[in-house]
Image (cartoon, rainbow, N blue to C red; front, top):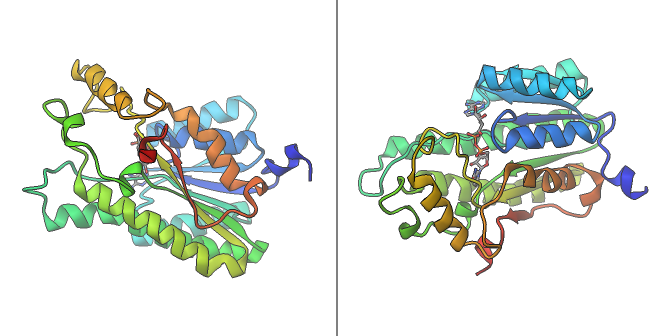
Length: 267
Ligand SMILES: NC(=O)c1ccc[n+]([C@@H]2O[C@H](COP(=O)([O-])OP(=O)(O)OC[C@H]3O[C@@H](n4cnc5c(N)ncnc54)[C@H](O)[C@@H]3O)[C@@H](O)[C@H]2O)c1
């Protein structure tokens, strides 16, 4: 296999949950550009339609799945629905997320459960995907974690600007990292590789909490200061890592958490 073939996803089918989002839309595009037939699975109908239109206008193969990718029944149904329509399933990227902003002193049992639904969805989509992947002789699963699944935040980065990154989110991402390793070990016999990408700070200026907020610039500066590369990341910087883990280029890589964080977790 030459290097071009190593990174090719020709004839393959990929599902990206949260595939119309800030980072997810770049992953959807990267996998489609590598030749995959991508299914952009997201709850935000307008964003999915815009994403599909953009991909198709570039001549790429893309279809939409609009719905809840983070519920047990709906997430399993999503996988079966897509695999049924496409006739196979090779790559699953779990990028969708949900959490509630809450402070440590007041965070509730329900807040924690709500955030953990996103982690649980990584497990149930994977379980369902594996049924279809086994039929093709294998597959790749990529869970999107977070640097905050590995280390916690610096309180002074958030102080007086924006709410702190929630404990429930961080705990759920730690669970995603651990489940990634567990799945990798037990599904290796089926030639299914499971890895995680753990993003560092990639703030989205269009997010409700930041839009038009003058504090955003200061927040960005504080995040940049804590990052060895001296800046925050951009969503297109997840294309390469996602394609690497989705393709044969990473054929001997499983159970790994790939930190794409500008070095945040290195010091
Ligand atoms: N942006 C960052 O700085 C950063 C840092 C660390 C980790 N991450 C992780 O990267 C991933 C992508 O984050 P992002 O910044 O692109 O966020 P985003 O909000 O832009 O993308 C999330 C996408 O998930 C979709 N979604 C939400 N609930 C859904 C549901 N129930 N069913 C289907 N789709 C649903 C949203 O519509 C959205 O398109 C997430 O897992 C996030 O935790 C992001």
